[in-house]
Length: 282
Length: 326
Image 1 (tube, each protein chain N blue to C red):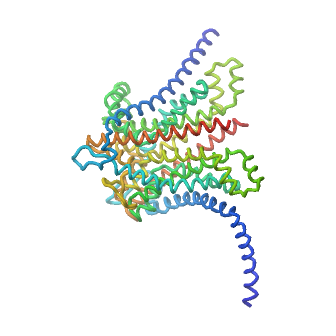
Image 2 (cartoon, each protein chain N blue to C red):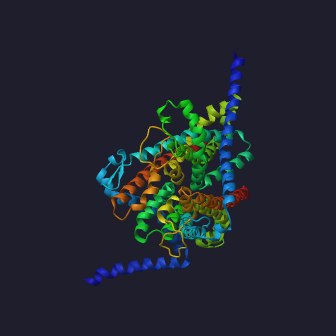
Image 3 (spheres, rainbow over the protein chains, first blue to last red):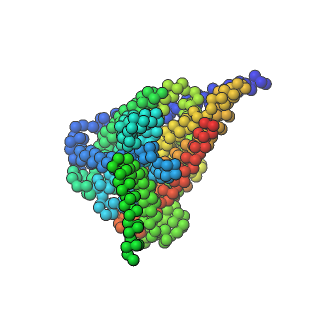
């Protein structure tokens, strides 16, 4: 009886532990499947034209996404100029200056802002900016910039907090003013982590499509204005993929390949830097 | 009369201002003020979000009240708007995604936290985090061109063959459906469940495991009956976090759900979600129009839902990690 029971317990043990491993294998293989499929399909569809030419007019094949690449760069640049300074400075304030009450208010609202679905950010910026200036890189950059703030703030605060207090005290003891201590001692000590955090942040918004759909719009040409519709890579992927034209699907795969390569590359670099830094602290 | 009243107050502010100026010279006050301004901006932007969503949706909120949530139909000609079809689509796709992602995610988290050697666990977690970094439009691309055709040609016929008598599995399947959207969503939320649950499990004190093993429990019994219950609220927290993400996920869902305003009993039928409607509906929305108001109200609903669920998630995670460090 006890022998049978213990057999059953051993069997349950083995089966359940094995299935937990299977779960992990499934999750990881989904990643490899997506990567593999995209790299084969996208790499096959990719050529030099993709980077140098405009989208082909309806009915013609070929063409590229030079305008979308430029548009994405423009939007992301503006987003960085908005999101990084605000998030970084606010992070410095939380870590170095803020009293407990105000800090918890800022942290709470940051979490709130971070939890806002990206499409809702799109709506608000649509109502605030697009209805006044029209679709374009300006509205797109503002939307993505707002999305960058919470993570910029959180990563700055976290990495600054990890700087040992003895460094601050040492600098103050030598007679440095508080802001000099922060700028010349505390921030340099945390700069690797902070920069990697910003890179991850940029990679995250680089793939955002939903808010750009409502704010940046779409164009088949180069756009030099800040308040006229502009093509961006993620929106082009969506538009081409959902179009009935077979040829445009190839373009979508190629664009997906380029976007994913960039996002993953930045992720791998930034995460490696962060984990190396963690080893050093230990 | 004027002298007595004005002289005294004039001296004091100048004194204060001078002191302030002196501190400004040292730079400390400027640095503090700059940082404070940035921190306040974050609070202001968030308040602006709430204010915008509230005021811009005033028109339809007053016109339809709570019935907005419980009526079906999106009639732009007669300005009659109801969110039921979208709320239904968001709810069903999210539930479906959780049904797939929760067992998978918790199972993988158990493996990574309890069984895998630390180096392997770290490497696998790195890969899981990369999965989370894939942009949703790319998951949508795979869903549209790979998943939907595969489901249509082999998976769905099989399910219909076995369970076809159930109403939720009836109707014609064209590839675009609540079912497809649920699977795509599951792929997107599984990394969150895994990485948060793993961290929560790792925070469970070691003595608990050792005590369970010492009294003769198998590895699985110690995990399932001691460690997991201890981390239960944190695991629920990770699930809530994933749910909040599923509710707001837009692109991948828009590309595979079929974007149909009808509510069907079958999960193989096309549907619509709140986020997908928002992505598609803005073409005709002009300043002050009822369409804009209705869309913003949809956004408000989504915003409120995600805030409540995110809040609950954070509370639950905090509860477990605090318990572990005690």
